[in-house]
Amino acid sequence: MKKVAGGHLVDVLLTHSYHLFYDPKQIRKMQPYPPLGTLYAAALLRKHGFSVALFDTMLEDPEPGFPAALARHRPRLVALYEDHFNFLSKMCLTRMREVAFGVLEASVSAGATVIASGTDASDHAEEYLRRGCGYVLLGEAEWTLLELVQGLLGDSGPRPEQIPGVTFLDPATDELFRTPSRPLLRDLDTLPLPARDLIQPEAYRRAWQDRHGVFSLNLVASRGCPYRCNWCSRPIYGESFHVRSPESVAEEMRELKECYGAEHLWFADDVFGLKHRWVEELATAVERRAAMVPFKIQSRVNLMTQEVASALRRAGCSEVWMGVESGSQKILNAMEKGTHVECVPVARENLRREGIRTCFFLQFGYPGETWEDILNTVELVRETRPEDIGVSVSYPLPGTKFYERVREELGVKRNWVDSDDLAVMFKGTYSNDFYRALRDALHAEVDMWAAQALGGNRNSGPKTNATMVSAGEVARLWKIVEQMEKSCSNPEPTLA
Image 1 (cartoon, rainbow, N blue to C red):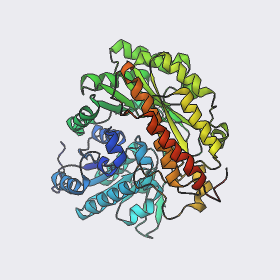
Image 2 (image 1 turned 45 degrees about the horizontal axis):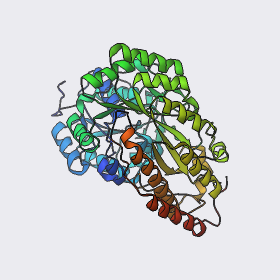
Image 3 (image 1 turned 90 degrees about the vertical axis):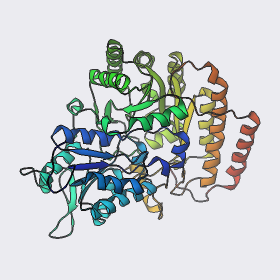
Image 4 (image 1 turned 120 degrees about the vertical axis):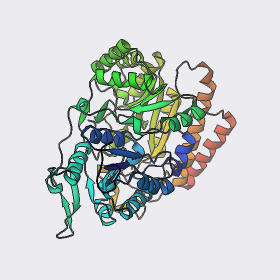
């Protein structure tokens, strides 16, 4: 470790604000992953000669843990660097904002300068700065962080006002100062691999093994998404898409398998398999290295062709989560999703033929959605029988077209408390209780199918959370939904 003057043991202590045990839904799922974005930033700092430490908020209680880390490492700088590959960080859950502000307060009290990077800090930069944060980084921030650390700690680094992608309070005027945006990194292979040696892998291993019987780790092959769904937040990458070389991804898979003992992988990319040739090359690179590990991905129904499904199987893919969203073409068009309902059964069948679990992300409550549209979605799920589903309601994220459309209807509450909140924060067609009942009924039905089919599942991967639900119980839950549909409608909902 590099020696640091003034009694400091490290140059930079990195942390993030997502704490699993403040999120009841995620505790039930118990699928924790290391903060990948934070580890990328740490690796780049270390590559350029700075000493770093990590307080990983994911599994350790930040209230006693972070002050103890401050005392142990005595950093000159604290980087509150959120994992932008974790969709829960993009949601800006209010409980996690409280954690971030706690980190800020403790760091300032300890005499450290705080640098913040993440969706919530970008959306509320002035609030973070007024609370004691020295600098907020905007956009893709690894190189911005490096240059800022060089400027703050080095003798010849750039001044903050010279660094793209930084905002801070001007000491002369006390007003917000923002530098020009930083261009996105095109060659992702120039970044060092995440500094996974900074985490405590055994804590993650125990959490996974105890609940699922398999140890899973995360990685990314790409950054960004070129599609234009108008409800999807893209605070960092916009509509850009850059992908690593298949060789570098396969090599990281080999390392996770052989050096860390990963038995399953989660590709945290916004969209995977954009080009079938790249997937073919990845499969070949994986086979060449004997690096195959069962993995799951997120993708789109229009990308899951038979050729892509076959290449995914060769590469080791065991599970695909697709953004189906709705069984109503009217709603898909309103979302500007760029997909067609009839593609869903085709994608499902292509993956089924390759023995790949197929899972749907579904979104209810989009403006203009009617009971008929909801029934179309339910019928699509019943027709295609996915192995699992994730149900949410439309969530207005700052910076999206959807947010601007409903902004005037938003009240004091603009973020969920945790990921199980499931609150419609604008004038939805139905009440929150209705959507929660709808979620419970649809989940119960899918869980019933999954539990029935569990014995025949030949895929290797985490154990399913599906529990046996009786047909009578499913029918009872749907009867509740039908009754609530008549009593829980909003007389003046937001229109499409």
